[in-house]
Image 1 (tube, helix red, strand yellow):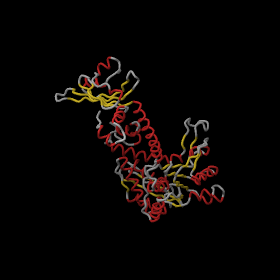
Image 2 (cartoon, rainbow, N blue to C red; image 1 turned 90 degrees about the vertical axis):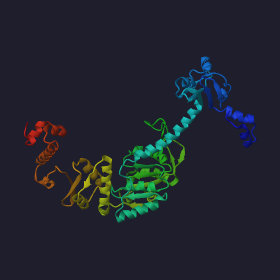
Image 3 (spheres, one colour; image 1 turned 180 degrees about the vertical axis):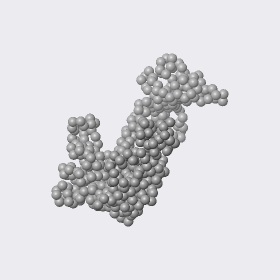
Image 4 (cartoon, helix red, strand yellow; image 1 turned 30 degrees about the vertical axis):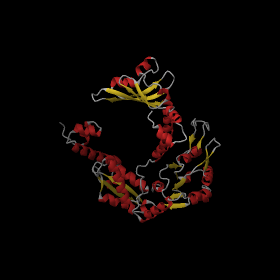
Length: 466
C-alpha cells in the first residue's frame, strides 16, 4: 500500500495501524500495477483486489473473473484504454489502463485505475443536478435578455444624468422602484442597470410583461403550480417567476395592466415575501427585489378604482420618471451613434450618419422615443446600399414624418405631386439603372440580382439588346 502507516498513525494517534489499513483497503477505488505479461505487481487500494498480487490478469480473464480487461488491451495495443469492467461478482468499475513504455518503446508496465461505477454515477447525478439548477437560472436570464441594445443607459443630457445618479443610490438598497414614462423611453434599460449595480447582480434578472400574459395564467406564472393543479399543467409542476428570481430582481413591466384580483395576491407577497404554488399548500419564502414600470397614469387609475392604492405605494417607494426623447435632445446623437456602432459591429458594416441626417434627428419629435430611434437606425443601416445614411423630416400641420432616402430614391418631396403608381414606376426604374450599372451593363446579371426576367428590364429601361 502506498501509505506511510507509521507517520499517519503518529498523526492520528487514536487509530491503530490495522484501522488505517482497513480504511485504505475498504476504499471503493483501487490502483494497481501490472507488468508486460499481465502479472499483478502491486495494489495500492481496494480490498476486492488486494489479494490479487502475484496473480495474472490473463488467467483471471480465462477463468471468467472479468468479461473484458482494459489492462490486456493496453498491453496489446500500447495505448491507453478506458471502459467499464463487470466482474462475475456483480461489481462494476470504470477502469483506466495506461501503458508505461520502456526506452525501446515497448510496454513495460500498465497502471490500472479502477473506480466504483456506483460512486461515479452518484457523482455525475450530483453534478447534473447542480448544473441543471445553474443552467435553468442562466437560460431564463439569457432568454429574458432579449434586447441586444439594452446594455447600458446613455446619459448625455442633464435629465438623464440626474436619473442615473438616483439609480446608483437606489441600487445599493432593496427598496421597490417604480419607473414611469412614455413607451420606448428605456425603462427596462434602467431596471437592468439598477440590477447590475446592486448586490443581487450575480442572481437572475427576470422581466415580466404583465400585459402579455393571459389573465387566467397570471397566478400560475407568478407563483408556479404543483403537479395536477389544472388541466394541461406540467405533470411535474412548475416553479413560478418569484421562485426563479429568488435572491435576484423581478421587473414588472406594464404593471398598470395587472387585473385587480391579481393585485391583491401580489400585495400578499409584497407584505410577507411568502408565496404558495397554485394547487399547493406549502408556503415558500422568497427574497426578491421588485422594480415595476408603466406608461399609464396610475394615480388617475386609482381614482377610478382601476389600481389598488396599497399596491401602488408598496411598489413606488422610489418613483423615477423617465422623460421622453424629445425633452432630452442631448441624448439623441449619442444614442444614434451607439446604435449604429452596434449594428456596424454586428454585421461588419461601415455605415455613417450624414450631417443632414443628424440635423433631421434633432428636428424630429420621436413619438416612439428611444425604441423608434433604434429601429430607424437598424432599418436604414441594413437596407441602404451605400455607407451614408440619409434622413429627412416632412411637416404636415401639427404632425411630422421621418422620410428615409437612399442613393436610388428620387426627390421625396415629389411624392405628394404624383400618383402612387407613377412614383413606384420611377423608383423602380432608378433602382434597375443602379443595379445595371453595378453589373457593368450585363442584363442577365442584373435580372438575376433583381429576381426578374430580363425582358422586364428591356421594357423598363432603354437597353441596347445584344
